[in-house]
Amino acid sequence: MSAEIVKPKIAKPKIAKPKKVKQPKIKYCDDCKEAVDSLKHGLCDKCVNLDKNKFICKSTIKKEYKLNDEDIDDLVFKEVKNPHYRCAGSMKLYNLLDIKNRFAELNTCDLKEIKNKQEELEEQQINKKELLKRNKEVKDRERLELFDELLEQNGLSKQDHSLSEFCILRCKSKISMTRLINKIKEIKKRIHDFKERMRQDNILNIEQNHNLFSVFYHGEYTENEFRVVLIREENLKRELAKYNLKIRCDSRLCNEYLEEGFGDPEKIALTMKQMEWFFENSNYKTIMNNLMSDRDNRMYRDVDSLSNEAKIKALDNYLKNNNMEDLPEYMIKFLDRPSKNNKKNKKNK
Ligand SMILES: [Zn+2]
Image (cartoon, rainbow, N blue to C red; front, side, top):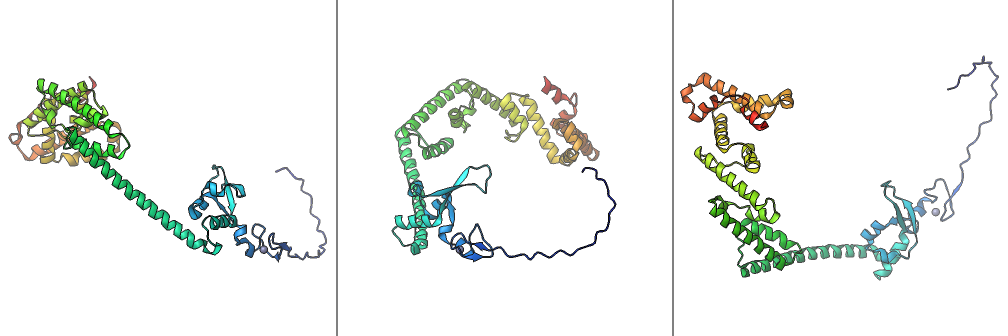
C-alpha cells in the first residue's frame, strides 16, 4: 500500500441523502415473453422445463433413446465445453424435443408413447446381450468338444494337466485348430526327444515333471538350461531325502540353488534340517520375530545375519535346560561351524 498523508479530519455536517428506492427490475422470459422476477438461463420456471428448451448430450441419447450417430446426424446441435472434465474436448448438445421427435419417427410411435417404447427397447437390449452371452458359451463348448476329438484323432492325450489347461485357453481364442494341433504335436515331439536324451544321461526325475509342456511352450528355458535345472533338482532331492525332507517351493535356499545354481545341495539340506529343528524344538521363531521388529535391524542388517543370531540364542536357551547329548547329530554340526559369517562370505565369492 502506498503511504498516505494523514490529513486532520474535520467533521463535516451530515446531510441526509435521499434513500434510493430499489425498483425490482422487470425481466422477460426469452420464450414466452412473460414478465417474471427471476430467470434461469433466460427462461421462466415454466419454460425451462419444456422439452424444446432442454438439451442432452450424445451419450445420453445413445443410452436412453438408442439412437446412433446416423439417426441424428442431420439435427442441429450446439457445442459446449465439457463441464465434467476440463481436459476433455467439447461436447455436442441436442435439443430434447428434436430427439424425441426423431425417436418417435424412427420407432413409429406417438410422443406420448415414448416412455413405454424406451422401456421396451431397454428390455430388448438386455435380452439380446443375454442371448449373445449364451451363444458364446455354447460356441466355446462346441469348440472344446471338437478340439478334444481332434486331439484324439492325432493321438494326443489331454490327460496331461498343463496340456488341458492350455487347450481350454487356446480354444477360447480364435487360433485355428489345425495350427494349434500342429503346435502341440511339435512341442510333444520336442518333449519326447528331450526325455529320451535325459534318460540316456540318467536324469530320471523328468517323468514326474508336470511343467514340461508349459516350459517348452512358453520357452521359459532353453533345453540346455532346463537340463541343468533337472540335474540340480535331482541332486537336491537326493541330499534332502537323506534327512527325510523334500524340496520346498517357499524355500529361498532351494530356489536359489535350482534357478541359479547358488550354494551346495549337501549344505542346503543340512541347513534345512537344522531349520526344522529350530522351529520344532526351540524358541527361534520368537527370537527372530523380536529381532525383526527392531527397525534398525531391519534397516542395517541382512536377514541371514539376524537369523544366525536368533539361532545361536535359541540354541543357548535350549542348552540351559537340556544336555548336549540330547542334540541330534546334524545340530552338533551347527555348533561346529567355522564362522558365523560363513554363508555371507560364500555369497560374495
Ligand atoms: Zn416462459
